[in-house]
Structure formats: structure tokens, C-alpha cells
Picture: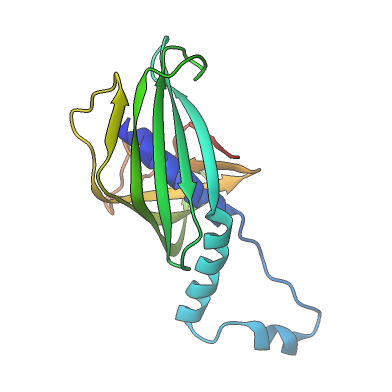
Length: 190
């Protein structure tokens, strides 16, 4: 369940990152030179601004837990700064393998943040961005029990391709603490 929450946040961030595209300009080299950032900090700020705009929204995905249950994760990211966006998470458990029927319980997490790094990496052959999820307390509802809940800062990667958000698999971390593989769960922007 913890993995799913982190994956959803990463997916939202990935959507923002993958949506970033090249600049334009004319054929005039002078126009392009004037539009180019003058410092590395300005370049990172410009990348983060584009990512932040694209990440804003709600992303939903369904993850099978076993043959008879599943979980729907909803990641909502609101407008914020170029480096940090407000984040809310909803996890709902279902007695079916496809997130249909009546939910049996779940948990919510509000007041979180997605911190954008501007650092691009390749994960499973796909361009992604490193992000940090800042996750505060949570509350449960229905018949869901959690042994522990991760609160604090969590390193994650996110990518978006074809309008689909994917995040890193938190079960496979590299030496730097970031996921080295992408989760199979795909989140769709609503």
C-alpha cells in the first residue's frame, strides 16, 4: 500500500516531466541565444516551471493486490511554485481485482508536497525525473489497517508518455535511494 502511494505521486510528477518538450524559436540564432537561460540555475528554474505546470491535476490508477482485491490510487497535485507543489493522496481498497464495486476501506493523506529536482534520469529505458515526496500524517477509513505508514521525505522518479504517468518501484532502490525500475501501474490524468 505504501508502494502504491509513492508510485502515484511519482506518476503525477512523471507526467509533468515527460510533457516537457524542446523550445522553439526561429531560424535566427540571435533570437535563440537571447531566449536561452544565462546560468545553470535559470535553466533548472525554467525546466521546473514547465514540469510544475504539467504535473498539476488528478491522476488515477488501479493496482491488483492479489487475485481477488485491488486498490485505486488518486494523486492530486495543485498549482504551486516551480520547485514545490501541494499534494493530496487517496487510496481505496476494493474486493475485486479491477477496482470495481464498493470500496471496503482505504486512507487519505493531505498536506503533502511534491518537490521537483529538475534532474533527469533514464529508468527502464525511459526518461524520468527525480522528485521527492514529502508525506505528512494520514487517516484511514473502513476495513483497512496499516502496520506502519511512511511519513517524511521519499525519493521517487516519475515519467509521462502518451498521457500516462508512471512512477518508480519503491521495492527496487539504487544506492542514491531513488527507484531503479518503474512500477507496472499506469496512472491516467482525469
